[in-house]
Image (cartoon, rainbow, N blue to C red; front, side, top):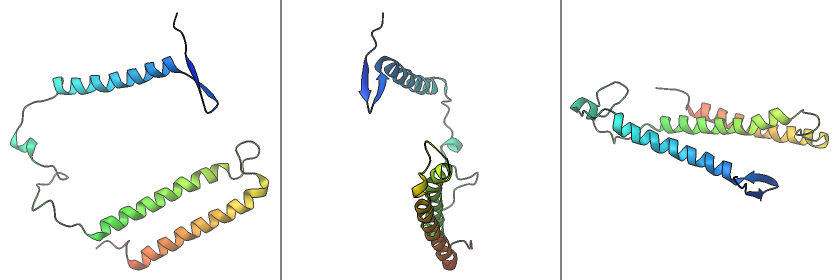
Amino acid sequence: MLKVFSCMTLGAEVEIPPLLLYVGALIGFVVTNMILTHIIGPRKKTPVKDMPYESGMDPVGDARQPFDVKFYLVAILFLVFDVELLFLYPWAVSAYVDGEGGIPLELRSTVFGVMLVFMATLVIAYAYAWKKGVFKWR
């Protein structure tokens, strides 16, 4: 008979052997796939396969030439608005739920005001980026 060990973590009981079994299965799966890739995978090297691949085009020039700042600005704007959704989604889900898991009635107007200030800050950032011409692709 398998003896089940358990430990208390933040008030939740976790059974250790099933967890170790799961971790062992995951590690075994990864190791098996890596070994099979090297055993079954193609081995024939050709000059075409050794060339760097750049979106289906032959590479021309040095790969270490500077990028235009526009690429970085668009990437940063994407991250800013992506993080915005990380903050807005939980609020939108729990804002007007009654009972467990929702925002208490006394705090709903305060939280709504905080979210309006947050969204206004993002609108200002968007307007500033628009004014600077970040969205104009030349």
